[in-house]
Image (cartoon, rainbow, N blue to C red; front, side):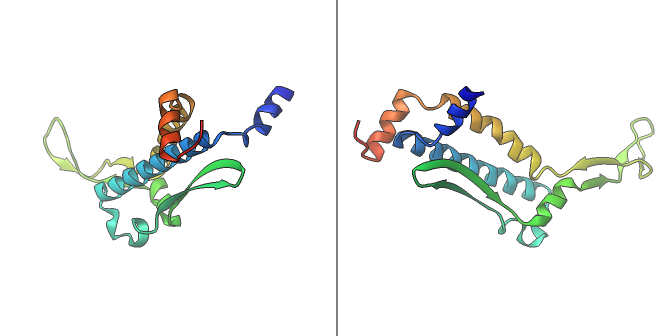
Length: 148
């Protein structure tokens, strides 16, 4: 138990290179989330839904010496309702008769939030766990003029 507490209490003791790396990864992944949501909104023709595209955004936040590296994704509330809503495909071809009928309908979800955000979490964790190599550390030190 003390080992776990020790790990969490040391989170603020990141080097400047590590803080910059975390901020860079979160900014890149935030942009990816934004781009994927934009593509999904365009794909489903939901651009008429007001502020759904313009009312979204993301920001990377950290607080002083205790850098917590938060990625905040902002969106309008009704985007979540579109995400939970199911859309109907009322007509589909009957394979035997070749006739269209509306008696059965297939239901498919709009994937605007859950699939995109939770799908990117794996990429974020992989980049944070395995992406901070010596080469990246040296590049960040050169870019931000950090002494060795």
